[in-house]
Image 1 (cartoon, one colour):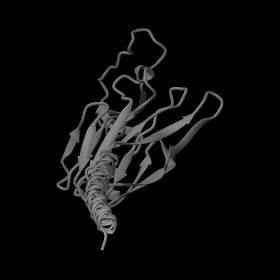
Image 2 (cartoon, rainbow, N blue to C red):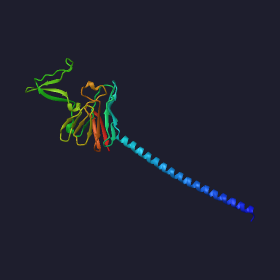
Image 3 (spheres, rainbow, N blue to C red):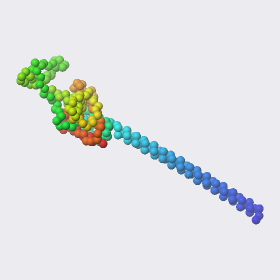
Image 4 (spheres, helix red, strand yellow):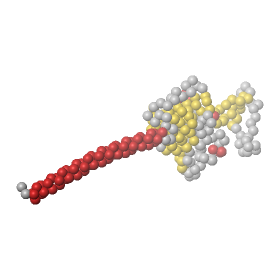
Length: 239
């Protein structure tokens, strides 16, 4: 074999070895890059899952808003929007009054039919009791029905419908402040929001509020109505 042939074979060998080394480097680089990409994709996917989970948890805990009434001077509405919803245990549900006129509403849960309350309340008082209009000299006075045995009957607004009120399982009555925030544990007999009106219009009924917020401790279906408009009903299914 001539020197020229030996040189050619040697050169070809070097070229093959170089090519193999280069290809091997590419393979290793590819594997490393692919592995890194897999890790990055996995990390990104994991991060997305966590973000989605956090967003879902946040949504599950966000307050659900329900409009009580609505409409305008011509046609005020007597409906809840939405009237049937689903909520999670511990998730706040808030009612507000968006009506353009001073039309009051209530959110009233009557778990015991014996606790159903009327809007007006007849009360017996001594026939010597006198009443003073507020403001003085304004055009109003109470309804007074003459009675017997030294008593009269007056007709007033029922405090248990006008004020936020809870009657517990033992029949104890608790009055709450306007715009009450209450947690229903499922043992109550009666839970009432009191009268609430659009912002700024509660002054038409001193002592009324604008909103009512409830959270539920137990799953179940909770039906409610507006005491002032008994055909106005709603339902909450708690998961």
